[in-house]
Image 1 (spheres, one colour):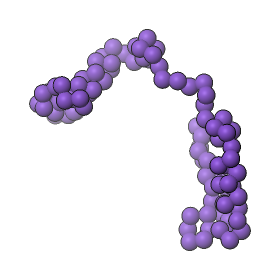
Image 2 (cartoon, one colour; image 1 turned 30 degrees about the vertical axis):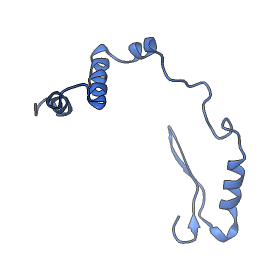
Image 3 (cartoon, helix red, strand yellow; image 1 turned 45 degrees about the horizontal axis):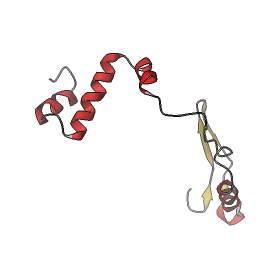
Image 4 (cartoon, one colour; image 1 turned 90 degrees about the horizontal axis):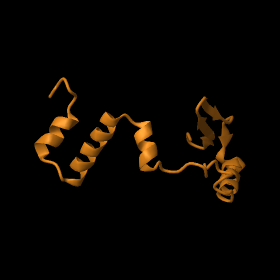
Amino acid sequence: MIEDTFRLLRWDRSGVIYTAPSNLADGYLFEFLWRFNHLSQIDRGYDTTASPPDDDEAELALPESEIADLLKVRECAEGTSSHDSCLERSLPRRWA
């Protein structure tokens, strides 16, 4: 939005699609927002088939070394690791 002119943009895997510039006084933005607000989640693009992976799926998706790294990060975030070990893990290997 620049002053009283706006465009609607939509991103997907292939790039961005955008509308021609419109003026706020035309009422198109308000009508779009009103209609969008009354859509269901599915109509808005919410993927009802997606769900968080269970532990078995996560192990298939990530190499074991990355899982170990993620667990170490969790330990640092929860405060169950020493400060020095968290600092060492956060630095690039060439700095440590």
